[in-house]
Image (tube, rainbow, N blue to C red):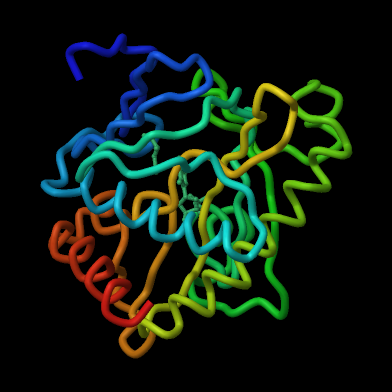
Length: 237
Ligand code: TMP
Ligand code: ASP
């Protein structure tokens, strides 16, 4: 990557410029953080798994009509993507109660919802990514009403598709976080990643956690969990 200029380094990825101003290279790291960076660690092999899983899932999502930033995988941990300006919203879809939903509303983890929920957090580390609603997002000029409509539609379509795909792998898609961006012409596309860092994935039979909660909650077996979900996706997805 030495020949490419580092544009941005996040907690889990680095982004490099390319000769084409509309294309960037994303490089996935093994670094893991939680609780707004308070907890730090390494998950060996994570970068390659998250890169390959994200690309496999985004390719499938493109086929069902969800536009993404993906261009092509370059190596085990690097991918060429379309340049977007990220819409500073964490878009969270939930099928079962877990994590901050359970904490906020006092609901035991694992309660199944009658229909999926959708929520937005304002992507702002200094403020601790506060929960906001769509009119707040418009007031803050984070997105237009039309963009929020597209984001809502794509997010539920992603959920329907991924829930069914993971079910074939014996995995419950509990919840996940998406990020969207705007291309130069304003088109909204799915960006960032879809991986065990950004999804809760439970074994369908045992409800064993197969995602980053193993790191967040010091449950052990983190690397094994990432490898296992990747293997299941390759074999059954
Ligand atoms: P939460 O229950 O902590 O709000 O998390 C909901 C989902 O979003 C879960 O699948 C993990 C994912 N997530 C991220 O990808 N990044 C984050 O910074 C947080 C807090 C959650
Ligand atoms: N990405 C988040 C952070 O470091 C944490 C998380 O996924 O829980 O703060």
